[in-house]
Image (cartoon, rainbow, N blue to C red):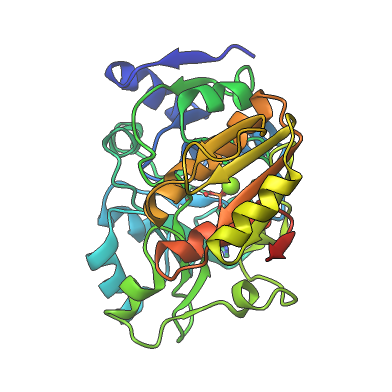
Amino acid sequence: METKIIYPDNISEAAECIKNGGTVVFPTETVYGLGGDAFNEKAIDKIYNAKGRPGDNPLIVHISGFDELDNLVSEIKEYAKILMEKFWPGPLTLIFKKKPTVPLKVTAGRNTVAVRFPSNETAQRLIKEAGTPIAAPSANLSGSPSPTVCSDVIDDLFSRVDYIIDATGCEIGLESTVVDVSTDEVVILRPGGVTLEMIREYIPDAKLDSGLIDEDAIPKCPGLKYTHYSPKADVVVVQGEKDKVREYISSKVDEFSGVISYKSGAYESAGLVLYAGNNMEEYAHNLFSHLRTFDKHNIKKVYAEFSPEPGMGVAVQNRLYKSAGHKIIEV
Ligand code: TXA
Ligand code: MG
């Protein structure tokens, strides 16, 4: 199919396409999303097909105002209202009990629906002009890292969608925090830019899903059970005392190896060394784009220096461990 790449000035065209049941890739503050009208089942089919996504993995519905919740959710608990007030618009997805009006295709047959109010201005304008909430997973082919720049979207989805909006954004670089607020407990199903610590400031009892802590437990966020975020290269995470980590990686690398390093200029014999960043926010922002860069340079094996930390570190660890298929070396 023909894909049109446009800039935000021409957003009306893309909004019209959503109204007509088409698909539009748009930027958000986390990663790019692959959107369609949340109430149009044909549009939802197109999204799953374009991504090659398994039908049992539900989509997030994006809104541009609180009033749009009326047609989506059947109950909003008091603590959910607090989270909405504090963190929306922003990188937080909340899972509510759904209204029957939400197609089961969006929720993969569940009686809950995931909703997010993004802060990115282009995303908000697209939803407003389309006049409907937009269902959107991350705009990557199923299994590969989420795209954070337009060229990565083009690599995965050109000729598979109607429109791609080329815009700035994706400052965070990892997908939103997913929090289940459909029961009496507040549970983080997927860590992200809104951290456990930030949520606990308002809801002290909030906790991480056991599936995120215990490797053998099954995560409640269906998407997290799939192999994810994986580049073609094999990824290995190396953790431990800084000097030992460097010594270990140095002994392994050759021209086909890539390294994500906290120190620039290290590992001269490696094929490609990319800088992790100064802190976990930077690591988060860089991770997915680095993984894609290694593939473009034909790197076969990636060693990622990593040192666990709370806050944003939890989200980085979650994505990094998954991209490595849980191959973690402690030195
Ligand atoms: O930042 C983001 O969240 C991006 C941007 C585009 O908004 N979207 C995104 O969507 O990451 P996706 O589809 O790649 O990930 C959505 C995650 C999946 O792991 C899915 O299983 C989970 O949310 N999810 C969606 N609906 C759910 C539900 N009703 N119950 C539990 N998990 C749900
Ligand atoms: Mg995704």
